[in-house]
View 1 (cartoon, rainbow over the protein chains, first blue to last red):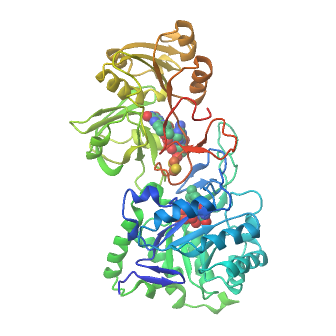
View 2: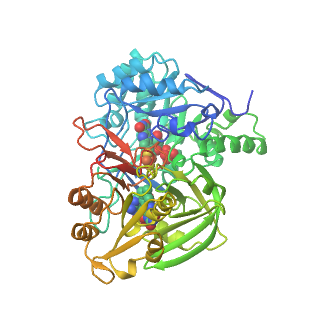
View 3: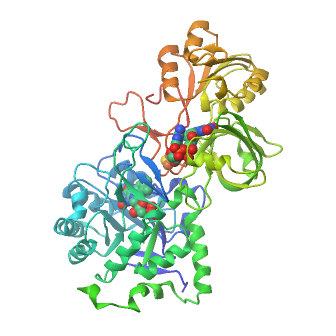
Length: 312
Length: 258
Ligand SMILES: Cc1cc2nc3c(=O)[nH]c(=O)nc-3n(C[C@H](O)[C@H](O)[C@H](O)COP(=O)(O)OP(=O)(O)OC[C@H]3O[C@@H](n4cnc5c(N)ncnc54)[C@H](O)[C@@H]3O)c2cc1C
Ligand SMILES: Cc1cc2nc3c(=O)[nH]c(=O)nc-3n(C[C@H](O)[C@H](O)[C@H](O)COP(=O)(O)O)c2cc1C
Ligand code: FES
């Protein structure tokens, strides 16, 4: 077996690299540049029941080592995703992690039920953490009980394993993680973007029309690493790690922290070929480090120096 | 689109904060449509993180050379202006859809109106139109004399009028003031410049056939991130949109809400 192949609930991956939701559309643009079958999986853009235009522009602003975005979950809606986007991806030998979003429990349940029936959707990613949608949404990600109830409702209808995508905008992420694990989540994705803002010195107003935006990119990597380090010691379900990954070294760091796979987001905007480049680089890194299989690295940062104080 | 490390052959300041940069690379062979843009990585690592969209200003297909003009404004373009001849430059492109050349028949007249740093893509457009035996007239608007560039070059291709807001060069006023007063004849109008200028063109000149090149903040530049969307004009559902990077940056009259 290849050094890189990873098997997680619903996701049989040739390698542990997938593009992160919202940073890869539905794959069409990137399919012109490389063969999508080279990816371990694809996390598609958040799908909501109705089509959404999203927020006014400017929707993005650069920050040191990162960017803020407030796209506002723009997507063509459930019907079109099922009839046009997913069939397009079915031509590739790659499992699809379908990111789903909504503002009410019923929205999530409806989208989960329908999307999980699509033949190439092998897992769902429950987006309870988008910071850019005003009418609620966010509270699903910040209250452990509400997050658990939503997870249960989606698990009841989903025909495929469910990953819950956690928000970093909380004081104790382990509480939410434990709550959704108990509610039946098959895995976790972490982290979504950190809520931020930039103010323009000329206009003296926020740069982003939505005022706040989600921070992503290399700047957030240490936050994600710390959170995965904490959460992976408290749950037994696998974690898809993300936040600022731009290289194979970053992937190794995520595995050492406790991730079992990773997603690459913002870096796709800087280099559209980043995912296949990391796959190639990673294989070589493991050979150089004499690691037979990448899964050996999972959580090694805390396994070797396990400190009981962390488990309370 | 390809991504390539190109080589800088020339870098020169040609007006206040305006730089002319020429590079050489295989990707130049694909730059056949004026109005397309390049997504340029100015930083070495991830500072600054995002690429910068810059229009193609001129192309020498045989020599595989491309020229861009840019205004050194913020951090990214400042870093670009520090690059030297011989340095490598990471470029993704060409991207987007350019100005349609077949909108005009031989012998017809195109009016090209540029404003400030919106002028550069009109140069390659003008050259391509002239190649097709189309008459070109240019109206180039700048804030002041110190900001003006490429006037001689445009003059060599066709009748060129310069307007400045402060009157230090050419006609004093906005490009639209000049066109309203002189009423030059044309069949198709092409424009690129600040949104208020393009809005004034649409509202005051009300051209029958026109193409506008839009600007919007970008993430990916290839249509994947939805950073650069603009709402479609008079769409009752409010959900229709176009992406400036991959559906544009050039759109015909009436598609986008200016
Ligand atoms: C299709 C297209 C073609 C362009 N062609 C040219 C050209 O030929 N010459 C030229 O000088 N400029 C051009 N621009 C504008 C150019 O992209 C910006 O001036 C440049 O990105 C500013 O970067 P900065 O780091 O200097 O400024 P900063 O303000 O530090 O940039 C911060 C962020 O905002 C973005 N940004 C700032 N201003 C603009 C803007 N006007 N449009 C889009 N993004 C912006 C930057 O890309 C960056 O992500 C074009 C823009 C677009 C969309
Ligand atoms: C432009 C943009 C759009 C995003 N859209 C979504 C989305 O629709 N659903 C979601 O769960 N996460 C979304 N994210 C978050 C990313 O999937 C990822 O969690 C985050 O950006 C951190 O990874 P990165 O630093 O590699 O980008 C988006 C991020 C960006 C930058
Ligand atoms: S810049 Fe990403 S879609 Fe246009």
